[in-house]
Length: 475
Ligand SMILES: Cc1cc2nc3c(=O)[nH]c(=O)nc-3n(C[C@H](O)[C@H](O)[C@H](O)COP(=O)(O)OP(=O)(O)OC[C@H]3O[C@@H](n4cnc5c(N)ncnc54)[C@H](O)[C@@H]3O)c2cc1C
Image (cartoon, rainbow, N blue to C red; front, side):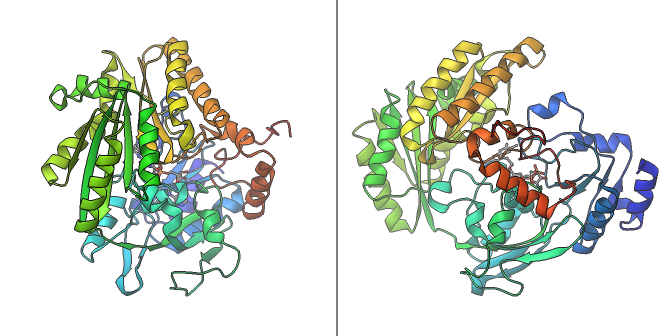
């Protein structure tokens, strides 16, 4: 269908002010937060801003009839080109559909439309003494729809888990326009094992199976107290060992973060006043709960890790906690300071490895960084083995970009070699689907059959999550 006809058809569904067809405005939708997006042109033919299930359903009906690709989009904070229109078509920008429909505090749940921003949801829930625990670093940008589609999480995943643990039910519009409810049509129960678990199927499906138009989330009581312990280690090996000591003592912190020597250097270059002690690793333990248990657990942690660290500090004073956390909070930006012409790229940034292989992963990433002559800063959620790797390159040098791509490929392969995964949080999109066979083997064919059953014409976010059509992975 040509672009004029497409625009005319979309005008039958949407008012003029919620359809974008102008080239300049469509250009905004050519980007997400990934490195790859810089080097490609993924312009949609049209963008629409739905605010009702009926509008999404009518768009998918139209798209199915004419086999037009449809790409759901939240805030575009994804790191994988997930919300970009690889094959043109229609982008559904769901970010303005941001109603919190119900806070059902008596039943510890909330119902929200897909465009609600994570930070705003938690701000609203705070009025009820509640919170939605997954905590991505992109909290002020990312939408609940995007979080569900990517099964997002953050530094508190070790204690609270990922988004999937909180999704009780979804409204989803399928290719063809059919609307279904998962988790029970009228169900408000917190536990439900009735039927196949379709909710889990759609969580993390990255927009390739349908459009999420409503989310029913379980929420938790907001913890009353918080404390932070910071420890510095002369030997990198001691850091994961200290984490294990804490677990073995029966304590589950709400977050355990690592900064390695490269990250410490970058932070001190970026903000000299933070002045982190020179060390091979710094660990930050966060504990939350009621004031008495926080104090007890914090002191226990300080004592346990003090046997391996050369310095430990435990704080519950809000200002001091902010000080201790300052280095971690700026590391993503600080990474670029490793070199004067440097930019931090989001590529190979999200591997996750078993806990007992974190040190090996960090050491091997350092070797790979030397092999490809690309500086790398490492930090991340050591408590669950999710390492954030930040290559720093001169974006104006095609030769360096080429070396960075090789480094990133090696980092992804390393994660699989270490019995981990190429992505612990950010997802696959169009940047990690080439590793699907190595990660999932024959299960890729089952994924393809599920996709085919729900989307026979492959209009839903084509080119993402699954390997390219002809790629049989040698199986
Ligand atoms: C600075 C920064 C920090 C980050 N920190 C974290 C972190 O700590 N943890 C983490 O997990 N991620 C993190 N991310 C990645 C990103 O923010 C998350 O993946 C987030 O959940 C994406 O939400 P979004 O609304 O921006 O989705 P988008 O980027 O717009 O889309 C992401 C994917 O979801 C699909 N999608 C979006 N909405 C829907 C819908 N309603 N129905 C179906 N599919 C949909 C899209 O098609 C795409 O495949 C970070 C990103 C940045 C830039």
